[in-house]
Amino acid sequence: MAGASLFALLDDIATILDDVALMTKKAASKTAGVLGDDLALNAQQVSGVVANRELPVVWSVAKGSFVNKLILVPAALALNKFAPVAVTPLLMLGGAYLCYEGVEKLVHHFLHRSKKSVEEAEQKIEKLAAGELDEKAKVKGAIRTDFVLSAEIIVISLGVVAAKPFATQAMVLSAIALIMTLGVYGLVACIVKLDDLGLFLSQKTGAVQKLGRGILWAAPFLMKTLSILGTIAMFLVGGQILVHGIPVLHHWIEHLTHGMEPLLGTLLPMLFNGGFGILAGAVVLAVVHPITKLMGKAH
Figure 1 (tube, one colour):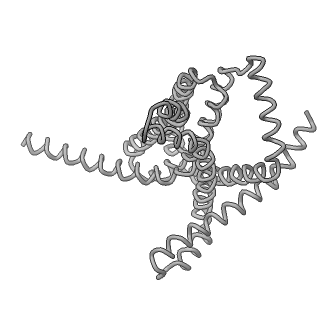
Figure 2: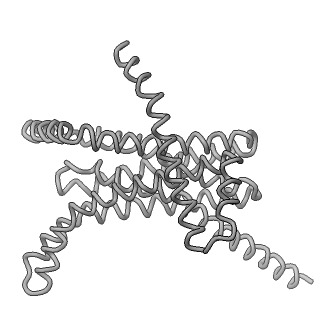
Figure 3: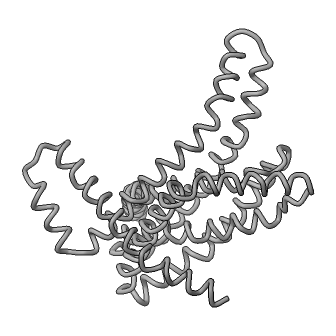
């Protein structure tokens, strides 16, 4: 009898773990846009730090990110427990924020690229000459940025498991928080040290030297690629959240793609979500930009 009860318990545990693994995978796919942007932003935050301080700075920001998750995961669980009706509006708000941030990045890239790059270069040279690159300020800024992006990740993940039992919710959110933090900052550490690896290998001979030179050549393009992919994913994920939160649009796109070939049935909703995300981000930017300008003048 005791043996049967033990096997039943083990079977229940295995079922729960399978469910947690499935939900964690689904939540991870939903947060891909934020993850790409998180990775690109954090790698950029470390730029300008002295080479031998890059990894300590990444570690400091990673510790701050863990603290952010320790605050956000219980807060998200409490929200879903006591005010579940707020989850969807928060998801919609998060989706709108992602789209807004994506459009803002595009606007700054195309309208202020040359002016901004010159100003940033001059400021960086001045700071390097004066020895004023404040490591603590960089860490604090990166942790603040991480808090916003971590909140997006946790809220989006909560939307995936909102209807599941509390224990499953807690395990999935904890798993996502741990995996995302280790994944992002592990990759950031690798990215910021790519040039050092390339330099080390380029001093060798033969094929290894060519590999090192290739890494040195590719490293700058990697950051640009991450930034582009992160922006695209922000529109896709943010647009999808908004479309799913508007039943009329969600049902319309489902009806439109019903019976289509699998490839077209997958691509069309992605394009629609991305287009809707760009439109939504542009609308939010049009509303927010004048307000921020007025606030700036007021100060």
